[in-house]
Image (cartoon, rainbow, N blue to C red):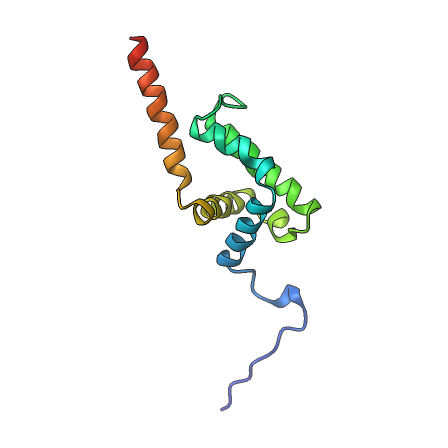
Length: 121
């Protein structure tokens, strides 16, 4: 019995894009719109005061800004993905572009807080 393979007749019938493709698009987006997202990454790292009072809220604001900007700037794939998947893609994209993981930025901010607390005590 021969195996029958059907070719998708529409894009909707295809598999969803692979995460690597999403990461590549997020990487390209970060490079193209770095000036817009830079304040969020600086706040996450502790280089500047937190925008929203919490690095988690700063990261969430960054993700929602990326999602909103993506739709308007030709990155439809980023604009249509769930925020949790976009967060992961943006974090990987940041590491791909800089060689530094976002969690290292978070650790730096935590260490700065500890040093300030120790100096105040």
